[in-house]
Image (cartoon, rainbow, N blue to C red; front, side, top):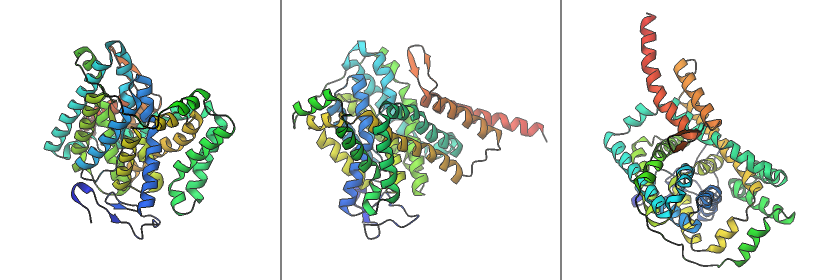
Length: 426
């Protein structure tokens, strides 16, 4: 039976197997050994991107990991255990945090907090108005495009990592494909995790690990407290970061829609809760020294591959992240994972996200003979895939932002104008 806040799950079938065409729902779980294994796979899926953001921006890695785990737990509680999601570091923060580096870390944290607070307010508004605002603003043609462009926008990153160490990346990719397709039982469900481990071991054998990172791993302490830092508030830095809210709204709503498509259950009534939860997680991260959070596309890929949407696995991932935040040794181990391994894994994960957007269109029977649907989706996808990057003042926005903004604004306008064309043809 499901307990308060969604903590407590019914066992799916015999807890060992998933029938063809079936999925493990958010309020279900497999046996605990299998659930823990899948939870660890979610940890692996989010680590590369979650730790990359603080590495680029200069934020403490273990602190970001700590608030990532705490934020995920809060998200699961606030969404009542109905939306499986991991809250990892948002790439959208990289540009404003990099641009404001001269203002100091405290002012940057204040900007992260401001973004979180605004996102919380938007979540409250969506909750009060109702899920109909989501249907009006983001119909299937829009949500499918947003989900697809989020995944496909990341394709150059995957390809770049793959090309940096093609042999290691190929071994990793082939391992993931083979284990996922032909691996029996639990092994098949853990294809990404197993593939990453195989890729890492192969890299170690052929000397593909970075020697400096390996040395840092040997010298790192096993246990240590994450460093905490407080914010200050500088309006110039806050204004620089506020456009990130647009991306976070698109990513959160896109995540809700994607999970709905995968599980076959409407979750629109929880879109406001999801936005509020991510806003709260981002606010707490800014208050303590971590980077802002978002729902993670990488973990959508894991769910699509495993057909396991159990929130129990995400509680395992959240707890693991918090525990590992107190181990500098583990943080150093993560940094030994070579680019080739990341490239091989993300080649699969990012592609799965893109296909998921197409699935939303297919299941909603979106009519692409309709010129409005066709043109706005086409433009949004190209903006996302090509990573259209434009600067407004001192704010730089990339492909996900422009693609999402473009279709969110263009669709209702074009739909309204299309009515006049229809009228004139009568």
